[in-house]
Image 1 (cartoon, one colour):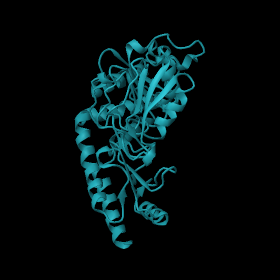
Image 2 (cartoon, helix red, strand yellow):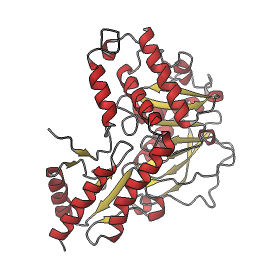
Image 3 (tube, helix red, strand yellow):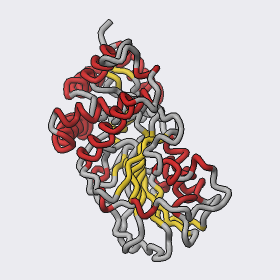
Image 4 (cartoon, rainbow, N blue to C red):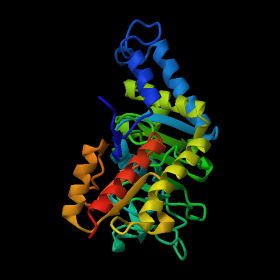
Length: 361
């Protein structure tokens, strides 16, 4: 069977070269006589896997030496609790709300801290990133939280707020490794792996070492303390071993193909093909303010539910799958993460042109 073009928001498409290597090594990994899935996480072979994965991610993102990289579990939802529990000093935090995930992070933090929603784009269905002008950051806030790329709504921060020295925390689940970032501008970065890095089940945390303390409340569960995992190099308990192995293959693949700088150019090319068509289409309309568009998640709509449904179904029949928008917003969404090819995006645009010709309103 021919592989489809998978536009899923996550779990998402992975590089074919990585999948083929994983398939070759699935039954027996190198000279171990076993699969990575069967391997002890304390074994020398797995320690080599996780050590190399961390080193390669550090290289890809130019992670400074005073930052720790953790391979955890529980996804972004767990980080919504871990962050306030571990970073609290003055028990206050500022939030900029640009979508569902940012709202969830704010809601969870309210259980532990005094929260301040500095700005929100909910008034226009999260179709833009709020202006940073005139935002009053609390100098006593423990951190400022943002969700840098909004998977559901298709928006992206293309510049960072000046927080006046307050630590910046970013959810990069759907944009990590898609473009160069200066890690030193952040206190903590977190990301679920299932969009740009690997299979679902692994969570990446990049945290400045001075934030790994014992300042958390006494009731903080052991597994929700960053120190628990940092002290044991992500090996306090059994980590998601196969997921980390797959992440490592993706990191190596990116390094072998020019790193983050090269994939950024690839991503800009793909996004331009789709957005250029949307901007001239009479049927399909992009849903995000132009300056705030995501390179990873492209949202669009015909404005007619039945026509949207017809498009999604016919696209599926052409091997263009998972184009249905999130249930909270409807319409369509094409997630074009790192592993999506230019050919896949062009195939989508070609089909959209054909569909538009056949379904003119």
